Length: 113
View 1 (cartoon, rainbow, N blue to C red):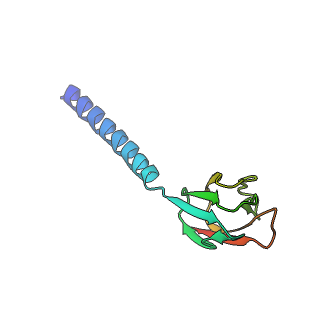
View 2: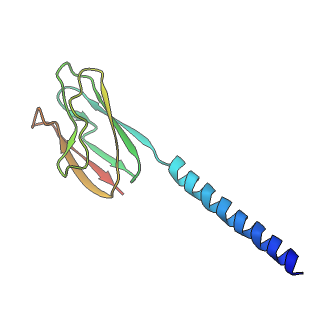
View 3: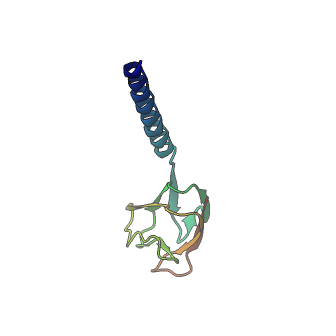
């Protein structure tokens, strides 16, 4: 009887571990990708709602170079020339105001929950 109990315990332990791994993988799979265009010296959309862990891809459609630089220092795409993209992953909940460091009138925000 002891032998059967050990096997059952092992099976239960492996099942629980597999279930936890699947839940973790499912959580990662649910992360989304959002697009922000930099066009006409503006971020489009100017306000974006995302979940923590989501990725935001900035694409510069202007002839002038631009950046997407978070005021809190959490991300900076660096200079993006025309048709270049910069990708950031949102790591924490809250409101992230950002700007173009080359054109300070260009401002937008991301709200992460």
